[in-house]
Length: 366
Image (cartoon, rainbow, N blue to C red; front, side):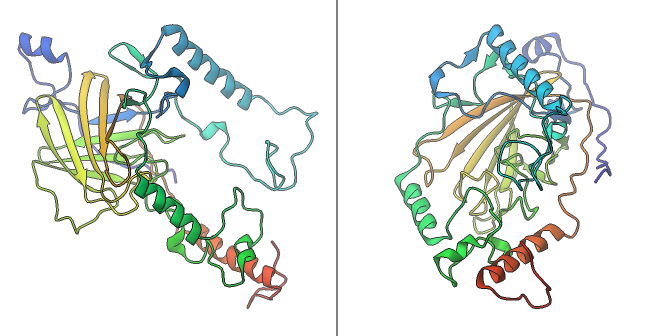
């Protein structure tokens, strides 16, 4: 899990620019061909939310004081999470981690593993209130009636849902032959099966998450690779190419790119029916733009169009600061033993519900 991914990209090539060009585009690294050199590692973690809080309306920017308050609140929250345990607090519930919640909940990662940023991001000196900038309220546009009907149909046809796994085969309460969420491995989410990264970090659009927020760009003349730290995704952008035929679907879609001045434009289509950006569908078209604000900051902008899901397109953008950190391998699983355990555990719970003795298992327990 600690082995490093060695993807060498060499020193950044910087060509001499005429004074007028430098004034226009700033002192940014360039390739020998004169294109902006986007190669490098970026840390995209940010406390700025995807959607703007409704109470802010169309307020797009924060004051310096408001941004400082957000950063201070996060620092305080992390300090409290990292504080030594109170010896008078008592032992956590059996199987629990001492945090709020039902006994038996082992909890998730503690704050040592969380890296969601230390503050909001700025673009052009402006602290943003959300990643989404269009619609003007900084929120997703309404979902189509067809999409809402599909959600309702899926809920009615699928197994019952519970907010928390309570250690029972609750799906059988509807009948011994009722469909369940663990009937086969392909029902489980992509992230659980280690097929795609968590939280739409690979996208497109590529978004920040709770941790593992590094992206590494390796730029060639006819191909650009974007390595996603979360899980193992590597996006391949074919430059000045045509999209594959629409019947060829890909986990991360089919990305082609071209330059518009100093901006790299990437268009992605041909998604699977359940793409990494889970809110969307296989009908999505995502257009991304990568431009250097300065030598140390890339501005990432994206527009999502999917008329089968949303009543209008939407656009977001946020800053990607350069980082001296390295991207480490994320070993999501080793032969995916955990998935085998999930399936086997469900069979044990079902046998327990039916009062049966599972074959080859003595005294099954929950």
